[in-house]
Image 1 (cartoon, rainbow, N blue to C red):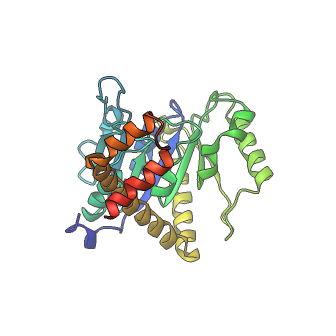
Image 2: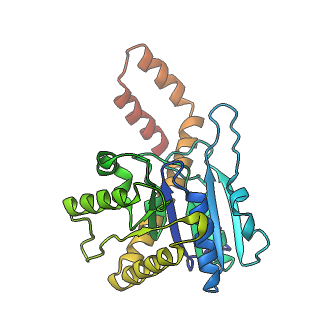
Length: 278
C-alpha cells in the first residue's frame, strides 16, 4: 500500500447496488462494454456473499462477464464479503487502490444483493448507481427503501417488462416528495435500460460523466474522497484496536466481573481503555 499510494487515486469509482435479481452483474457487463467503446480501461470488483455456514463464496459474477474475459483493457476481480456487512468486502478499498495504480480509468464496484440499509457503497464510490426492476416491489416499497436515498443515478433495468413505467413514475413521485437533490443542485436522473441487450448503457455512462463533472465543479469530489480516506483510516485503526483489546489480559477479568455483577459494562469499558492508555 505504501508503494501504491503515490500512483493511486486517479480512477473514477462507480458503485452499483440494488436488490438481488435486478440485474447488477448484467448491467455491469453492459457498462464495461460502453466504457470500452470510449477507449477507457475498466476494472471491476464484484462482491459475492460468503456463506455464514461454510465460509465459502461462489464468486460467480465473472461467469456473467465472459464476453470481456479476453479483453486486455478489462480486469475483473470477484471478492468474497467474508461476513462484512454493508454489501462490500473488508479489502475493497485496498483493491480499488491497486486497480487505480494499475492504470484503470474507471472502476465498477458491484455490491452483493442488498436490502434497505446496506449503503456502504455510497461512502466508497464517487458515483452510486441504484438499480431497480419491475416486479421488485410496489410504490410503498420504493418510498421506504433507505437504499434509494444514496443514489446519484437511478437505473430501471429490465425496462422492456410490464411495470417499468410504473417504477419510473414511483421514483419520480418519491423524488418530488423529498425534493431529492444536493445543496448544489444535482438532480438525480432516472435511466431506463435493458442490460441483457445492452440498451441504455451509453445513456447511463453519459449520466455518470455528467455527475463526475458536477462533482469536480462543485468541490464535492474532493470532499467525498477525503471522507473515503478518513473512513478507511478509521476502520484500520479500529481493527488494530480491537486486536489489542482481545489480546489484553484485562478483558477476560473484566468480563467475569460483569457477569458476577461486580461492575457494569460501561465502567468495565472505561477500565479497559485506561489499561490501554497505560
